[in-house]
Length: 267
Image (tube, rainbow, N blue to C red):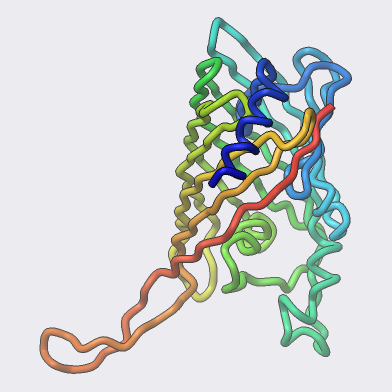
């Protein structure tokens, strides 16, 4: 306990006037500034109103992607930003064909080329405590032959590939970022996703909620600790006794909890 208090005291003295910025908001980075995380995207400020972002991990997994974020308006504590992106997930899907689509390992089925453009709008309000709403829609545009169909897999992976495999993915999120001290912030959000239809049919709605703490661990480094919960239909069934005493198989939704761990470096 004494050690923990000593650490808190040292951190507080070391960064008394350097408050952590809110994350996942409508704000864009200043020109020449950048940030990158193990999972957070690489963000680069281009002008006062334009920021470019890309996910390096997805790039390494052969899914080239880039997003331009354009600050439309700032009036007092209100910021409105347009978000425009494009990705090409075909390389990654083909690389994992024998795993994500195991029956295709020795078949003639092929994953076609896809270009996935996306457009979104982020609105943030507040300076210290920041509330943010974001709506994004991504469309899968097939190019040539494609035999790929939907998967019943983990929610993050299923949502990532949903535009290509189901036609589209729409995402609505509402979040709140609040400063606890100058070196610690807390974030919570609720999320909803709608993806395209699948065959055989299942619920197209995914729900989620997350909570995280951002802890300054150096002058430019931030550690994120948290968790995200997904509620979705994975075609899971259970056997239950009905009111008439008979056993019957019933469809139930899956509930998964994933940890959030990241380190973000800013310049």
